[in-house]
Length: 207
Image (tube, rainbow, N blue to C red; front, side, top):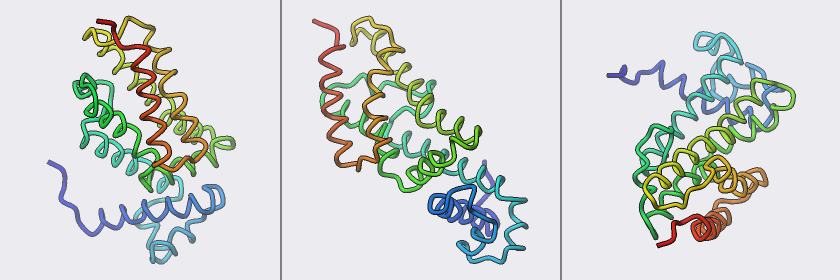
């Protein structure tokens, strides 16, 4: 069992959330510990009693958002890890559409995940660590999940045999482009629905 939430954990969570807001507004490099302390409503010295520095706050903020992302995906039976149960993707019709939409909605509509993407986008060209995080969260992990899903669909006989890595890139590519363009979720949702319909027509096993 995890430790019960207490004042220290609540304060750290608040720091992570407020810090990410400041990072998204000012950029990671330009943000100071004083900026974060002001956003949280703490004295700068008090902030150091929770975190040793800005890098530690940023790392904790990233971890907090990724934990939230995992919980959001799993709460709607969408894959968050390649070893998760992918049976929801064996459905058809509206049930399949719902789980595919659930796989992408947090990336477009969750304020914390959107802020994280903006921070990493702004810092990735100057900071290799941010570039690695950006690629992991928004490119490599989604592709890994898509490969797991398509492998399951092929094994179940629902998809025609295909090169699953290529199929994963074909499916994730247009959605990732919409993400990079800052497409609002209602518009992106319609894109995903149309894209899924066309993709199924191409890859679904013929009876």
